[in-house]
Image (tube, rainbow, N blue to C red; front, side, top):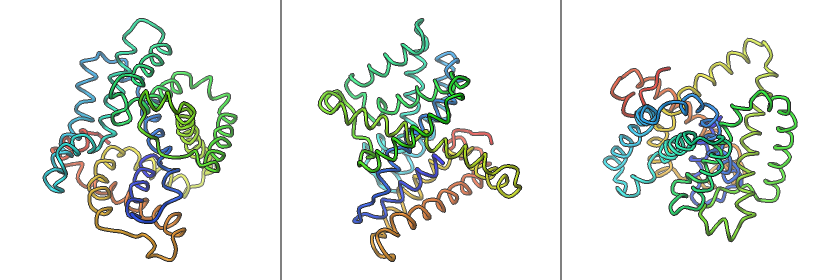
Amino acid sequence: MAILLVCISHCYFMMSVLESDLSPIIRSLNMPLFMLVCGYFSSRSLEMPMKELCVKKGKQLLIPVISCTAVTVCLYRGGIHREIIGCVWFLKTLFACYLVARVAKSIKLPVEIMFLLSWIVLLFIPYGGTLMINFLYFYFCIGYFIHKYQGRIQAYRAALFFGSAVFFIVSVCCHWAVPCAKVDAGFILHSPMAFVLQLLVGLSGSIVVIGLCEIVYKMSGKGQVAVKVLSKLSTVGRYTLGIYVIQTFIIERTLTVFVKLNEVVISSTFTDFVLIPLIGSALCFVCYYVVRLTQPIKIINILFYGGQKC
């Protein structure tokens, strides 16, 4: 679901003139959801020695960054400075979150205190908001704590889901669900309520998506068709990093540049709520099959997919 939302949100750049009602809502939660899930699965990596962690995550995250940046500069003639910063930016942000969290854990204080202090430092140091590191690090930490306290949280998961759903619905109705602005000390000090709302919207939206996935899973029961569909979707999720890289080329750098939908199809509402989500979903699966076809090629796997083994 996380990578599906990313592909859909990027397809909204095809609507260069038409203002979307759905795109800001998706963009308010898709990256927080992505980072929360990454934080949830980070506990084992954060127990590694710093050198081992840097080597492992460098191969997995930074090598694809270098490869993708080189390709976009050469093939798409993007500005070098722009591509060095922006190309597959989430992988850089995730790498930074791993490093900050590992340094925080190495200090002999409770991890809850150190994660909070490290987040506060990121919020107020210069350039802490570069690539949204300070904003998304919050969700990385939350994901880590959800995993750590999973046993306790399970008892309250229904209340947590419904509370989050109510808050997120209210946020959408009140137009609070907007993409995060760049977070720095000035933004926090001058617009503290907007900052808190953006944090809570991303968190509640992430919990709602996760909760809906659990509901769908439980409602599927033991039906063979439902189990088969969910199994296929979970397989797609294992190739998330590769899909994210491939969609950079197919969606971000190609289709959204040359394809402009605007109001050419039936109506703006249809384009916004039906056509673009369908196109984004279809392209997500296209990217998945491209990854599946090219991943067995060792050099491509190492350079673009982080050497993943699926």
